[in-house]
Image (cartoon, rainbow, N blue to C red; front, side, top):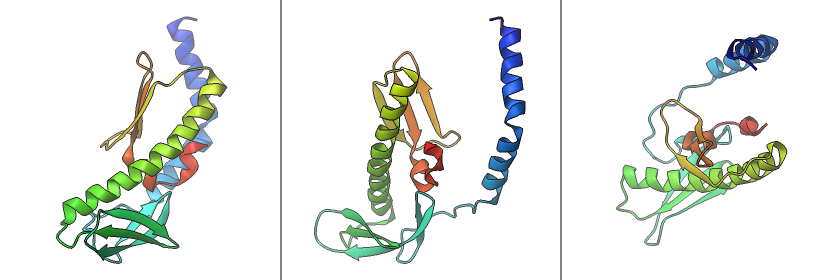
Length: 153
């Protein structure tokens, strides 16, 4: 297939999906914008698009994050600052996202006949994810753990 014909096919497909694209753009525009987090009690945090209140529980033990009803419980040492609290929550999000993504990748590998060698999670400023086909590597934006699970189709 020539490049011009391929481009024409892509354009036709995009035009056929214009309604869906506009709907997704409207949903994105309507989303609340996050304010910088301070990692304080009763501060709002999101998981899979749902809002949870953060509860800080200070204790002399290794840090731990748990989810109970509409609350994210962050067990952390009393001397821990904002940076340490953020680090612990980020690791918790990373663990949850890694589990969700591995199930999704496994499903899609079978459907499209490809093999993924590695899936990584990291913070990205402008993308939801990237893919290196030659290496079989996928990088996913950590922020996806905070968004509705619709990204999984």
